[in-house]
Length: 405
Image (tube, rainbow, N blue to C red; front, side, top):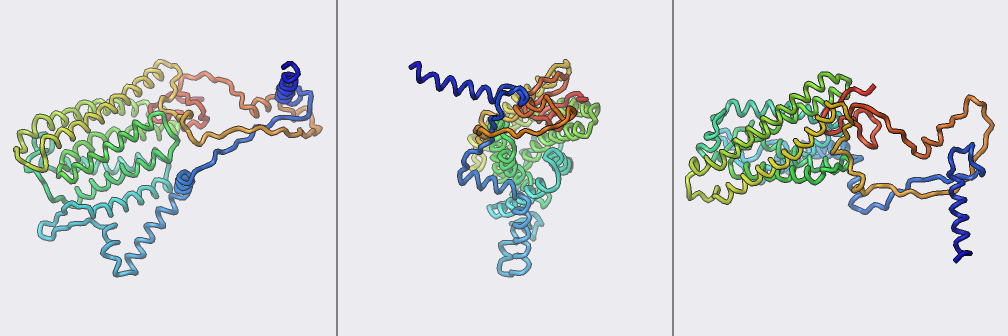
């Protein structure tokens, strides 16, 4: 046992000598170099990586292919036309019905949103542009409707089997956006709330599809208006932070929190109450399409979203309190390094150090710390995200913090 342990001890000592401080203190001209070794990727992950790296070309090439086929292949127009126009048009009323062929237009919107998001701007700017367009559009539809500020009107004259072109396009585009958001959360760095976000997107997609096919686009429009108004202020605050306008950022972040409370916890619950209290009164019994089971399913899904928004709001309050108090506030939704399957393994290689005569002014005694990954903790009253040196990441996904000089 004694003889076998000596080589191990010698190897450990030799290895320690290699890594014992900076090169000018080492007794040997041999060093250990840590190299990143990527784990083997499966076919699915390889295809996903190729899609992420080429999403701009794939998106616009698909759109170009559809346009060319529609223009130069007349026999294909009955199919390709469904990607660019609404289906189920009624010439008599000028409105549109609903059906499975609407999936063609949804697919086109998903491809278009993917290409625009990847090619035009960063994520937060894209979200700001999207919600700045679709929230006023949804508010315009709501303001000019029969159910403006009238919860009972959400259920009057049900079902509305035909929709105007504006309402149909609005609902289908929102549906496509949330389907595309599922792709987005797999394109981004995985966050600690990855599964909460995935659950939120799945429930939202289920509610959109249900309200569309059950002819409840009125309540769908109102819920989207309440949810989307909040999503304008958060990306706006982040963009202001990125450009250095921290004072305005703090103001917008305060508006964001207030709008979150009123839109997502007060008015939203009023809609949930209307589903419970008004639908039995406004929609008579005996209807096959909207039974009590269907009503409870709608209400349960909306309340599940409410639980998620409460959880997120508590995290937002925690971050805001830390920043206001001047303490260090880590982004609670930072990248989940523990579950990242692309984490690189490290392999060590013994290489011979090259010696070169240099002047005193060229000697950098701190280079070994940077090479070995030694980091010093900096104190700041702003948000600090572990593993991110870019100032744009200081805001993370939630909140604003003081400007870091």
